Image (cartoon, rainbow, N blue to C red; front, side, top):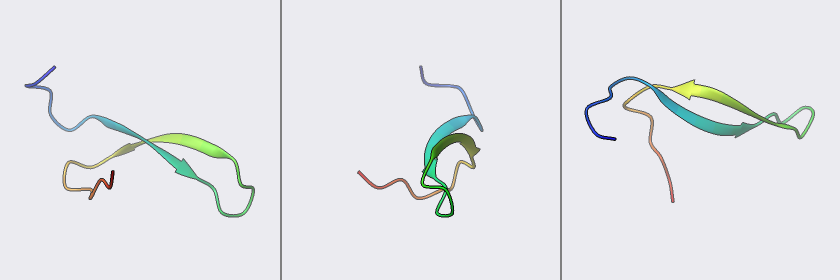
Length: 33
């Protein structure tokens, strides 16, 4: 829902292990796709 600020959860891949992990991303983080 709109109105929530500062809490976005993104899925990132760890380049060393190849595993995916979730992390909080800042509001100005460029989201592609």
